[in-house]
Image (cartoon, rainbow, N blue to C red; front, side, top):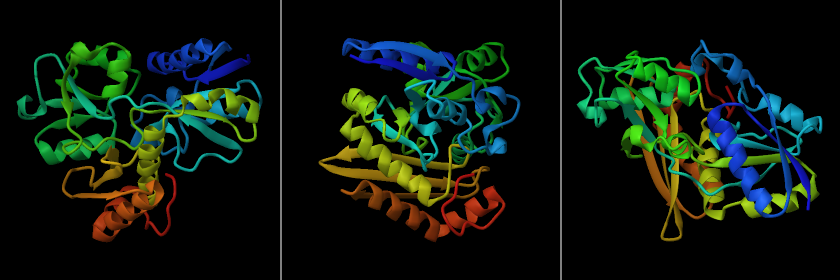
Length: 311
């Protein structure tokens, strides 16, 4: 069996994810070591994600370690990976997906509608902010960065009435008792790829590829490919107000997409069924652009969207 080195960010959640993959690989007889790598996104904690605007801010340094041969594979939250994978790398596996939805975490409030008028909500996601504003325009939405522990400490200290987190992270860290409401996807459309892990290797490393192929989940591959195609069509990344959620229904892919103004004043929703992930993602993305998504995103980017691009 092989000796494999995994590259990962150092947050509690990232390490859970890396160790989860390490356990699966060890069960197949491989010898695994873990290398912790600090990324740009881990270093910039005093600025909201929307204002950083750095392509691959949670992946660049890990890819550099891959390129240099310091690690053999990288474990990413798929939603952090740019839709255009960097030249020279390959996503060999997309793992079975955790719950892709967002959750409301609060001490006293059971659901979003129960929050007090003007309640203070923590999130640095424009996607979450925009959809919250549609539902509750009175809420005071404030930036919230840092790992899950940091965010929970800020909630506990009373800085926020509630915070919004990904259900997948809450579940993986065993914090489900803190999650008051799993927010349905038709209310808060998740980020493309949320809940899935992407396993990245050097392109052409066929030996490592053979060891990792068993990690690929066909359903997760199809649905997240569809979501990421929509995101690519709209030229977006994890820092922009775009939601994409695909699920398998009776053998077809059902995709819903959302583009929203960060202040909630404009929101576009589109959903369709199809059997080709890339074509369906492109079609829904094109429909959203035609209906006014281009104008919304132009305001966000501060420039016309003439072709798909990464922020």
